[in-house]
Image 1 (spheres, rainbow, N blue to C red):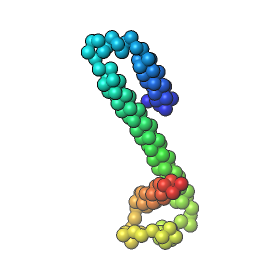
Image 2: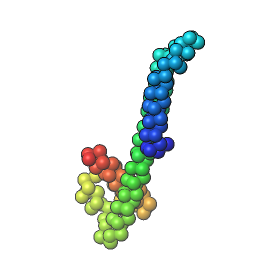
Image 3: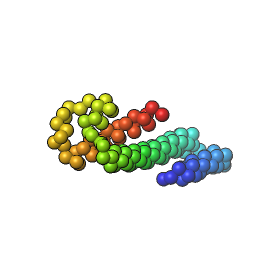
Image 4: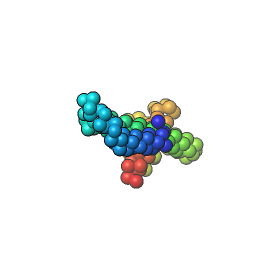
Length: 133
């Protein structure tokens, strides 16, 4: 459900609550029939809050996934630019970035291993920058 749908749903819930809480005849009828309208209203409000929280959680998850996708693309773009530079040297890059790595045999890394290594580095860097914003 999109944000505008969430706002519409919230307004609909609010309007519905105003309608049912202002209808004294309905409340009197339900009370005569043995329905506890205060408990019914309380349960309805709890359900509405749960729906609103779920909508908010879904929106947050969508934003997170979009940020993650954007970060991954930015990292890939950065690696592509880095590897396109004919003067790129992995060992110098690691020293310049002050990375601590366990794998010291850089000459034997395949191109795909280098790309994966660099993409992970940039993903972490981008996420860290986002956290500091």
